[in-house]
Image (cartoon, rainbow over all chains, first blue to last red; front, top):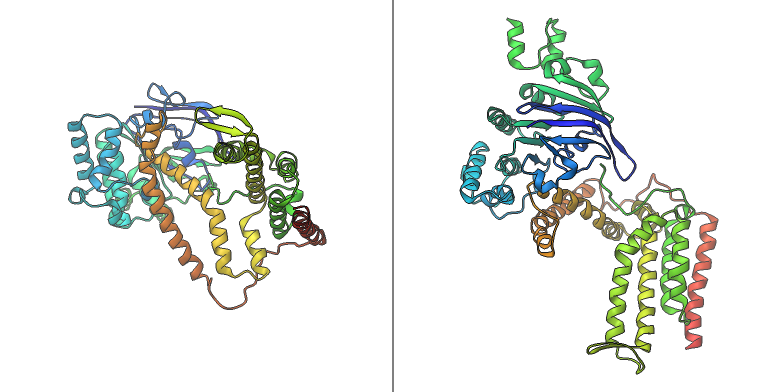
Length: 264
Length: 259
């Protein structure tokens, strides 16, 4: 399912102009990372995708739906949104009920809900925790419950808001694995992140925002190699990219595999 | 979007420039005058004339009227209805509804009390809109208020806007999971269930984290604390405080003399 954004502008009631005319499209099945300094407009932009924010001007289309004409609850069947802080959404007595909350809201039959929940729990390695109260889990695992609760909704588009913040290396790898599985299923994955190494390893397209405008948009290698332009939005290229430049490698490398190949 | 941590609206107005203690005394004067003045129309004049003028002087008229319409007037109307119907005074019935009735005396009594509540809540609202909690606390602690008391007051002033912001985020998260929050009463009431857990749990965690954070910065240290933030206390402030104190005394004196 494609996302089409046409001259999107958004001004908060405080008068802060957060988005200043953004136009872009995301094709079905793309893996897109959105990067940029704090206040660049990343969260404001993606909150338009599921109707949490309505454009001050311009439009956002999710497939054939103009988001301004649909409720958030309705758009939830097309766009899943994993919030940054899992504690702001978990409320059920056990993990199973928590994960089933979304698909039940979407009105799916019991058999379908059960199948979706089972798949989401398996993908997030929560099979053994179904009866645990989410608040008894560590913050790391609460994050996985939040992920599972959105994956279980089986939306064609999934948004992650800073998924790796505060996560240890093992859980970052788990999250990367979830994203890879969603990619295999043909889902569109959009991630806001400050973790550039995570971005370089897992995303094929990068959009850099700065002060409410698109600064760069293109394949990850092209965007992450533009050190001077990225500096405008306080983003450093991945460590390997910088190391490759220091070593005088001709091609821009952005992940381990490319780096090793370039050294051979 | 930054979360609002207090009701304070940053504006350049005469009221904003007053010392917090002066504004606090102004609030106290308004409340005491509304409750103690022996003239029936005092709270009405204060509510209808003085308070709106005060909000405009503080350049927060729009925010004040918005709060008044959404919060203060409905609460005052409810209070008025309860007292008008159930206050057992007077015999001259001016309105009847089945077994309920309003007498002329209960109407006047309820109206006056509702106006007093409007004055009280409005005065505090304008105070909160024009005074940053940290300025109030810096000033009061400088005058000798113990830090622990200051912490309790500042937490109370900030808890509502903070919880409002938090509740908004939680509701957004649940709506993103397909929760329908619009519709009839039962649908709206049902939408509260996924809100309460994260809101209460999150607030408790925040209280604990904040306590640890301020203690880590020597909150209960016995040393004399200095402040980088100077709160001006001009001669106008001092003069105004004397005037307000005189007004309070006059209200009390008039009440005793005329009763």
